[in-house]
Length: 303
Image 1 (cartoon, rainbow, N blue to C red):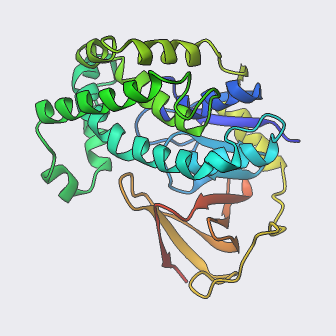
Image 2: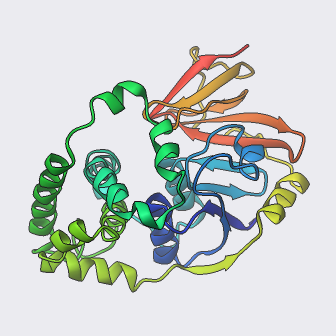
């Protein structure tokens, strides 16, 4: 198996989500640090435009979005399953709630309070990632903080009766909520709210104590060289389907439907009910196969 490479930066909450799963599965992986703001000249050759972090690379296969990254890790490392089949639906619903509703209640207050710790252009960069109508509808910070307090109460109730969110074992639900609360802990006012909940505090420490798996660091130039020297496998997976809306061979433009709406353009190689793979060619790396989840993305004909 080719090496697992995670393009990330240390303050990225969504990178922390994936890293907690590396820890759970004790996976050997390489961390490639990417800039916290655009441009990202050593990521764009791989993704073609997608700029969200993290991105997982395996040879010349590029995986965007933590939903898809986690599914791929489950396929490749089944020996230590993340979520039992009977809990998967519940875990995915909780993860979607955490990635969107819970994170939205944390992101604004956290960025406001930790602004001094990040580059000067960070706030402008993050504002540029948002759609104008979202920025116009932004809620007052104090209201968002109050909503976060209510979120904490729900989470603490659940953890008061079990070691993890869905019982005795770490699952996707824990990884998804952990990365949000771990990030919130960087903001003093949110950390103070978290610290009032003993069950949450114990749970957070348990996950932190899991570590990071078998981590090593890699230069971005080395990751690009690996992609350049590899040949992506275009063999469709067993669950590939024919979809008239996304026909194989069509050129397509892909972008997130929430924020960071930079476009990736490529040729559809295969489609499943939950994912799509497109071929891109870049002067620096040659052919790569970029994988996206279908949930949360817009697809437009680019032929």
